[in-house]
Length: 356
Image (cartoon, rainbow, N blue to C red; front, side):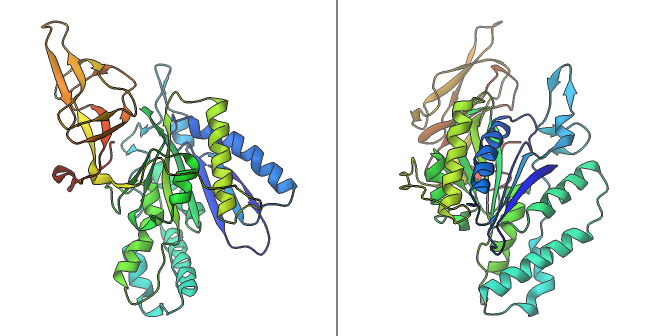
């Protein structure tokens, strides 16, 4: 992991932006190329007011994983699994160490919490290669006021995963990016990186309700559409949007212009459903990205060419299609689509809310 830092002396605001944690998701890498050029120009003009850490590629382990000339960058091929799971959960240990040191000054509490998280991370003795990477990433990002983890899905519209306590403060990010969905959860399961960075703040706020502890890290996963959306046009558009967002947050000087209207309001992640196939076969979609569906509508059919049987995959809620598969050869249990609704679903109240 390597990155470039731009800083203006005397300003605390820190923004951490990285791409490639899932090493085969390339839209973020191209975005970093475009954003880096904008930031270099801003630095030359003396317009960087905070500190910006930009890491164009954060996962050298995944970068090196090729099987039969196919890049496999989402999962570590040893025993770890998904590169964006299993990050240290810092909140409980921080609470043990700072309880009697908190004051009625929010800024002092934020400084104390950040220092304690740094100390805990410094004490971790990594064993595996992936352990080293997790600690390195968190140690680099844990001080950030803004932490953006750039990803993409298979085929998808722009969307965000965000800690519930960060809304509606993060409306400016969603609006500037033109996010079609902002999916809220405090614990989506699996300890993803954004929740490892943001989660300690709302854990501590609940643990010490009589002390002022703000959600001091706007940590989010930004899903930059789909894997094939790798174009200079889209990367330039998204880089300009993040640049305007950093201007709104006072990290870069200049006028970002009026804030665009939200495409859609935020919704609870439990109101979004992952449709899976119970059978193998050839998947044929009956919808397109962004289409609105009603509960019971057929989203796709799984075709068995031997028997001519067609198994319908139906929407489980009213909403719109946010994510679709990019490959049509499916096996039982494969995710077919993500439908974003507005009403929390009973079967989504337990277990992991994310696809692996």
